[in-house]
Amino acid sequence: MQRPFVHPAVEDVALESVLYALADPTRLEIVKTLAAGNCGMNCSMAAPPDLPKSTQSHHFQVLREAGLIRSERRGTEVVNSLRCAELDKRFPGVIASILKASEKTKKR
Amino acid sequence: MQRPFVHPAVEDVALESVLYALADPTRLEIVKTLAAGNCGMNCSMAAPPDLPKSTQSHHFQVLREAGLIRSERRGTEVVNSLRCAELDKRFPGVIASILKASEKTKKR
DNA sequence: TCCGTAGTTCAAGACTTTCGAACTATTGAA
DNA sequence: TTCAATAGTTCGAAAGTCTTGAACTACGGA
Image (cartoon, rainbow over the protein chains, first blue to last red):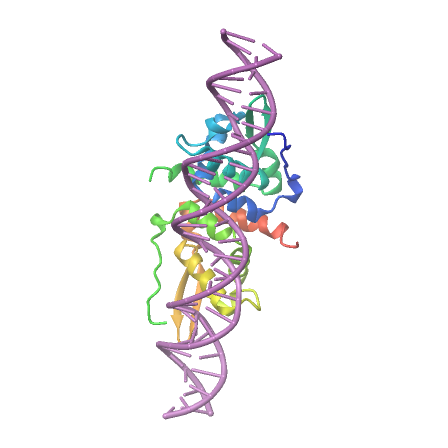
């Protein structure tokens, strides 16, 4: 809990890492929840219920290191938010089209 | 070589599988090569040179099962082509924006 | 029929994912 | 200020995936 979070600069974000992070159904779900909420959200809120905390922690780490989210400590919790605007500048339309496409196929 | 190729119907293609397939640098490279060529291409042509054949075969299988490419046997070779139009109907803009974004970041 | 080319399959080692258990940091209450 | 609850991290083990060499199959041409 003392180790500070590391966020890559937007220009160091690799497209492959972004796709990799979003390729996992759990992580895509987390990103969708954050996108829908439109504001920062702690890990437990943004993650699907019943996801073990260690798994949750792992997924947030992947999302953070891929450059998709920004995490900040607020007391005992971690507030996560999407880096949408930054990413859209670097990879125009990519995140938006994926989020849009994922809405249509969410029920399965 | 006798086993026929299995291609998912476009409506059975999962967004996660597409993202997963494109998240690998080698596979993204293959897809970019196919997109640039604008026509069917055998495996050795489309894959980066010096990629071991077994690895190559594995990547084409992943791309095929993810619904990204269509493969057909032509004598001793396999002709692969992107399923762009179909996929764009199902996931509008996703493949196009990824291919576009990947052009800017290809040199690394 | 035999050879070369194109690709597949198999197996093994390396790497990743998931999740329980143990841990740490912060907050709020006694 | 001490204690417990909350929120998340770290570690380790089991299960799964990736990469690649070696052996294989299939087609086409000489």
